[in-house]
Image (spheres, helix red, strand yellow):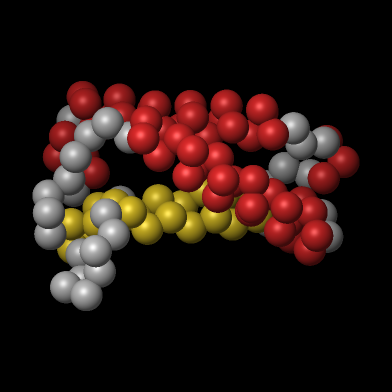
Length: 99
C-alpha cells in the first residue's frame, strides 16, 4: 500500500512483521520476526519500482505456519523474495495499482 508520507518522516518504507500465536510460543514467534526483519533488510534492494517523494510504501508480512512443520531460513527467505518480485510485477504491469 502506498500512503502519503508524514512531513516528519524520511523513510520511504514502513514494514510490519506479524506472526500468528498459533505458530508457537513467544520465543519461536520472536525468532521468526527477527529472521523476517533480517531477510527484508538484506533483500529490500530487490524492490525496483519508485514512488513519489511525498509517498511512503507500507508493507506487512504475516507468518501463520505451525511450529511443528519446522522453519528453515532459506525457505522463509525464498518466500519473501518471491513476494517482493510479485510486488514488482504488479507495479510493472499496472503502476497505478499501488496508489
